[in-house]
Every structure is written in C-alpha cells, then in structure tokens.
Image (cartoon, rainbow, N blue to C red; front, side, top):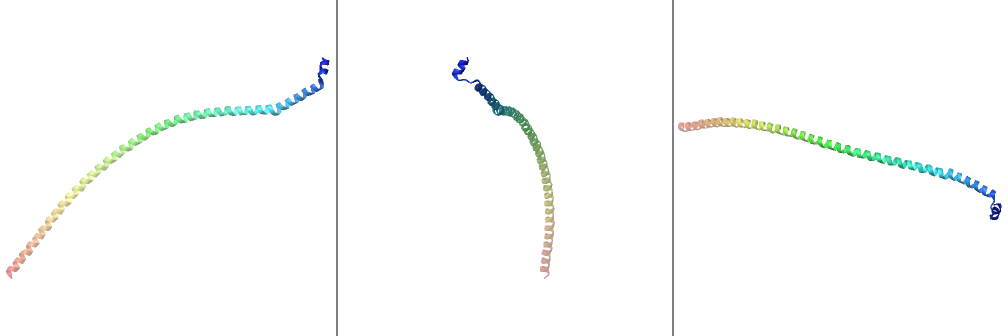
Length: 149
C-alpha cells in the first residue's frame, strides 16, 4: 500500500494538514455563517407565525365587530322607529290641541264680533234716532220760523 501511496504522490502529513484545514474551515463557516443564517431564518419563521396569528386574530375581531355593528344598527333603527312613532303621536296630539284651541278662539272671536256688531247696530240706531230727532226739531223750527215770519 505504501507503494501505491508513493506512486500517486500522496503525502500523509499533507492530507492530515488538509483535514485540519477543512475542519477549521467547517467550524468557522458553521460559526460565522450557518448558525447566524439559521438564527435569522428561525426569527423570520417566528415573525411569520406571529403575523399569521395576528391576521387570524384581526379577522376574528373584524367578524366580531361586523356582527356587533349589525346588532347596533338594528337596535338604532328600532330605536329610531320608536322615537319617530313617539314624535308623530306627540305632534298629532299637539296639532289636535292647537286645532281645538284655534276653534275655541275662532268661536270666541265670532261671538265677540257678533256682540260688537250688535252693539254697533244699537249705537247706529241710537245715533240715527238722535239725528232724526235733531233733524225733526230743526225742520220744526224752520217751519215755525217761516210761519211766524
């Protein structure tokens, strides 16, 4: 075997040095490249997993918020309808009160106007009677003064 080794020119010391060099290179590459790359990949994988969990949580929160929004909107529509109904009934009651008051006021105004019209008629009759009496007295005086003259 030594003949074969010498025939090919293989030196044992050189092979041993190459093996040591290779081992040192492997240790250096593992320490400076392989482990940092693995750590970086693990950190990235953890970030991705955390991102997926966060996305799932956000989707669940969004679904919950959507369901809550629907409930709130339904409640708001129901409450708005109830407020609208109460407002309409209050407005109807107020309108009927206003109409009733207006009718009462109109009746009072009509009665007052009729009373004033009757008073004006009586006053006009008294005034016209007084005017007729004055006119009759003046006519009588005139006739008497014409007869005496």
